Length: 204
Ligand code: DGP
Ligand code: NA
Ligand code: NA
Image 1 (cartoon, rainbow, N blue to C red):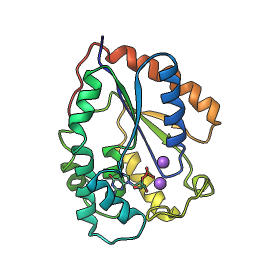
Image 2 (tube, rainbow, N blue to C red; image 1 turned 30 degrees about the vertical axis):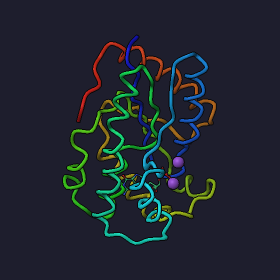
Image 3 (tube, rainbow, N blue to C red; image 1 turned 60 degrees about the horizontal axis):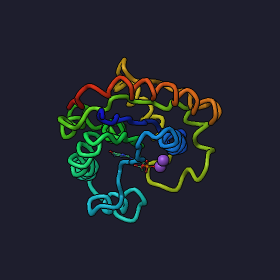
Image 4 (cartoon, helix red, strand yellow; image 1 turned 90 degrees about the vertical axis):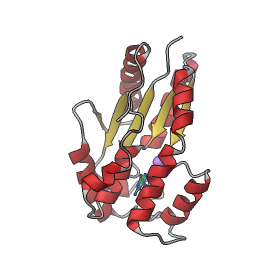
C-alpha cells in the first residue's frame, strides 16, 4: 500500500475552502480511499485554545507571539501528519503555513521573518488556492465575526497570498458554483493521489 497524500487548501476567509474540503473528503472516502479532514489552526489543543481566544477577540496577544503560536500549532501536529500519511491516509487540510505567512505579513511584518518558523514543515503534495474577490467573500455567511474578517485586511491578505504563490499551486476560481469547483477538485486530486503513492513526503 502506498502512502497517503498531503493536500492543502488556502485562500481568504469565506472563499469556500471548508465546504470544498468537506465535499472532497466525503468523495475520496466513498471511493474507499482513507481520507481525513484537518484544519489549521487546530483549536482543540492547548496552543489552539490560545489561538482561538485571540481570533475570537476574547484575548489580546502581540502579533509576533501569535504568529509563533500558529506555527507551533502546525509543528505540534507534525508527528501525527507523518504517521497518518505513512499509514496510507490522505489528509485534506483547510489552511496551512501559507496562511501563517499571508496573515502576519499582511500586518506589515517582513515576509522572511514570517516564513522562518515554518521552515522544515512537511511540504504539501498539492496546494489549492481558492481565489475569490474579497468583496464577494464579504457578503457570504457570517463574515465579520472574527478578528481578521474585515475587507480591507482581507485585501492585504489576498495580495500576500499572491506573492507567495508558487507555479505548482492550483488556482481555483472560487466564484464558480460549488458543484463545478467540486468536480474540478475531484479530478485533480485523484491525479495527485496516483502521483504521490510511490514517492516520499518532502520537507520545506
Ligand atoms: P479559519 O478557522 O480557517 O477560519 O481560521 C481562523 C482565522 O485565522 C482566519 O481569519 C485565518 C486566520 N489564520 C489561519 N491560520 C493563520 C496563521 O497561521 N496565522 C495567522 N496570523 N492567522 C491565521
Ligand atoms: Na474564518
Ligand atoms: Na473555514
